[in-house]
Length: 523
Image (cartoon, rainbow, N blue to C red):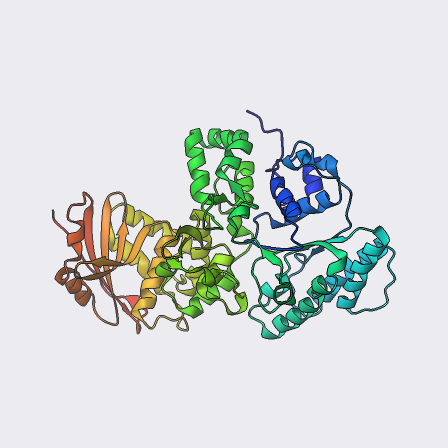
């Protein structure tokens, strides 16, 4: 049981990966599809850390004709002349673009390299004109049309969604550069762009009538990421070592990988997809952890979610039509579109009769990333210990059937809610508790329907059920009275677990939970 190939964590260069004997999941069948399709312009959107850059690099070396790198891969069996094309790789994923001039610097460096390589005289400092000259001159000098690969074409825009001036500056600049895809079409063999979102006000989408967007295509659903079959075929030695080191059976190890890193889906029909970054990281370090979450905080998402003031639970388990997800612009996106395009929601099912997608959080890793970022917008600990300690105490109290301690530790969180945070309603209180409990891994349901109403919160463990009614500037007595009057516990009468009823009231004046009322149902 020995994995001789290295895991290419963070390695996005196809040549380096192949020459260093790194593990590679063969995606070259998609290269054949692209080449044989005959379409000139392509676009693919996927969340970050999903292998977009590596696929572009695979395309790059294929079009450069470097057949030796593809020995043993599917594409090496395809009838292709392997004559090299000039390839222009425009990688915009090298800056954060917080200042207007940064894109100019990136384009200057890239264009200068191309101009030096092909001995092109620089006659114009305008980037759009320079790009046009580069494309035309390379075609004339080599006799081969140019292949243009744009990595993270939208990076300057995504980084400035909350800065209108910078956003508009970069939009205008990018639109002028990308306009060359249409004006220089006679000199171009292929354009392939990747990014996170489809910004409708860029010329690349408004001008190119024959652009093929494969973001939602079932044919290309697993162009990035790892399928179940690919995991079992390519990673078996790594899975076995991961299992052995952690005391798991092989099946247990696969289950943990699946529950933490699988669950993405990008088309109406298609297999679930594993996050490649997380799988590689986990099998390399041989431990489950939140690898994707560490690569970037979803601050933009958290701020937008908080401003939308949406019900979190319903938003993260919902249905929508295709127009909600396709062709949107993150600058004016709905919360659903924003969460989907950035990878915090994914397709779980599709109903052909209603033409509705069912969306959900892909897996545990994504849930933890999202809730951890959302939680500070509702709850901050200021007394009684650090957040990790309090969270651990809450879990223990619920697991051990100690509702008094649970309420006490819950109050520690809410005592620290800043006064400028939106806690002016019962709905916000529900949201804050829901996020907290989901973050720490407790099974929680909100607004649970019964025959006579809706229960605010139901928390379940293996041995206990907690039925919680919340009031805002009311009283715990009112909350308990509602639980009993509407017979909320009746739905769980046949459940073997012990049931606790908890009436809570949050005071906006004291910023505390009042003394709770707690009763256990006697069966």
